[in-house]
Image (cartoon, rainbow, N blue to C red; front, side):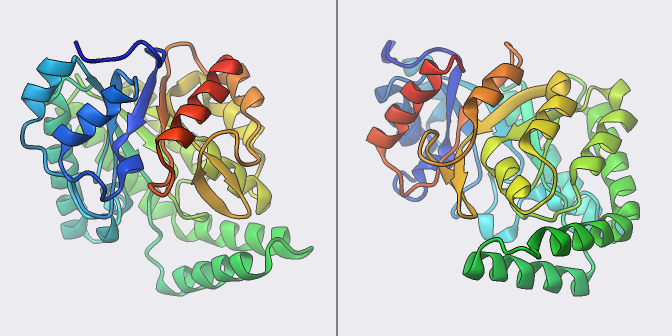
Length: 307
């Protein structure tokens, strides 16, 4: 066994953290255990990693894959697969379903129990343009006095316009859960501030599919960014959905920038620690520009808080 004793067993490292530095899952697995991690999440990257050689590296290192993000087999520029499960176009939905099926089969091949379905993209072109303009304004000017009103108003229109798409999301997830009952499916809000998986929509999906065991996956950094924009507090997400949470992406955020190492931004991780279920997967997901020293320092920060 090549794993080091330094990282507690409960932490996973997302392959997203490597970016394009290591191009095969074999190299990433060995780099992960060299840092002391014993678990790996196969995450989404700009260029998909090559999976050749992973079976042998799993045997040699003993590393486990505990979660996999749907879309990891495709370039990030194509947008994560989950964004299309609610498409109004039947052919697009079917392609998205087939893509998630491919990811679930990969997860089963690696004995990975959880597949994360991230985001749901609104298809109204006019609203998408408004979202892009608002996001650009936030990046340029920061939060102004009028920002929360504008964000909440636009979020309400996204919610109203996306009702039918959310219904399609529920049907798509029902289909997948019925076909693959042995794999846990978890929904996570997308990277965009105003995708269809809003606070209310997440509740609708979880309630509608409770008998199928659809779970919730939390993102600490992006929840904070939504709070800063006026879309409900981080604590509200945790208070409402912690009981259905099977995992969390641990990243920090500040100034509308996410995927920062925990402890370097503004996320209240003490709050997170109070809600995190004991059995939830804990996955460190930071931007590839952050290196080994920052990753290990963030793990120590989280351990000190009891996460």
